[in-house]
Length: 80
Image (cartoon, rainbow, N blue to C red):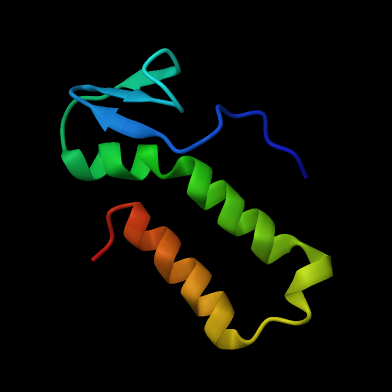
């Protein structure tokens, strides 16, 4: 499955979120920083879900590897 989103990483700069450079504007956010972190983590979340859904590699993963992918992605999105 392919997603046509701006490539990551996405970064928070002031009230804006940008793609790979300052010209790769994604959106303007307001409110809680936690929401901005979750938005900025979208490329990593899509990639993690893609990996987990990929039939080629998933048969060989241990439950610890799956847990680690999920944990790292949630941390990037602002989880503690």
